[in-house]
Length: 410
Image 1 (tube, helix red, strand yellow):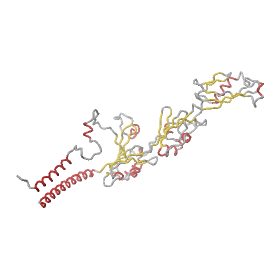
Image 2 (cartoon, rainbow, N blue to C red):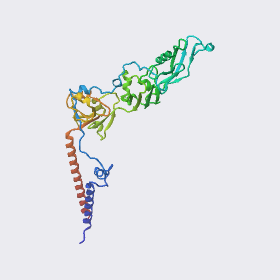
Image 3 (cartoon, one colour):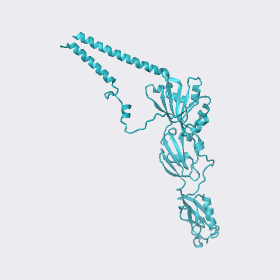
Image 4 (cartoon, rainbow, N blue to C red):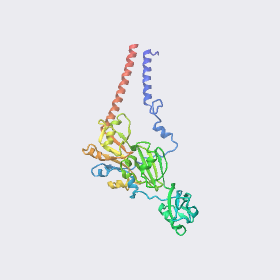
């Protein structure tokens, strides 16, 4: 039986349309555009792994009149609080490796160090000894005085010790000890400074900013630099701008301290239904100030999206200190670690919500998330149904058009 040409063409058109739908409906078709492997492929091709459905435990805290008193105080780590030192400056002592100058004076010529024949050759009855380095035992050697303990002693103490040893040998001896080279009272200034290195401490005592200045100053702005001070096995990290603006943070530096500057601007991450994210991207936003409130953070993110957000569901994610949560009244006995995952909830539908947000202090690395309103999910579903119906209608119209064209042609 011979098939008419227009029927054959119509069947070919239907076949092409069915093939197109088959391609669209294939779930794992490699011909479709993609940015990487699908989750099924990742799971199927794994050689080994560890899967778990266990959720991370966290604490949920409502920002309210009961908690804002704690949350409105900037939880800022300070040098003054971690390294309390009420002395105006550290007392300088001699250490192993330091090199000392020693001058010995006698009341009259003809003494132990100033023979009569040489007394007139110089303007005074004294002698300058060769520079003495403090050895590994912490001692120096002075002729006729023997071994003198020097490490961990001040220069006046060393002078008195030498005088005591020479009192019965020299003529009314007096001793002057001065520092020639300093190798024990040093500070390391490293990181993002212009001239990092090891610096000798000034004998009158030096503060933190003075040492940073001697190292060439920071490479970046103070608001973008953190300074870490390491002392006696303890490390404290403070924003440099806080040290600059608060004289109490500019503490005295001690020997063997380590100062490390890093370039890192305090930032928070803004996610969810915010105007800044209306084009489908989320942002890490710098503070640009030492302290930032939640209301300021919302403003930096462009504010809540009026067509998408639920003002009653604003959250801040962070890891909180156990002792701080206990002060808030949170039961922390169910948590193992001292750094507890915590979510703070703010209801901006409440008239006082923005007042609470204006007091809530953000911290660097916080994650701010604004949830979608529940109606948005229904809108998404209706949009999907509408798009599916429109696609089906368009395909039906295309098929009808092909049929009409075939009939008209033949």
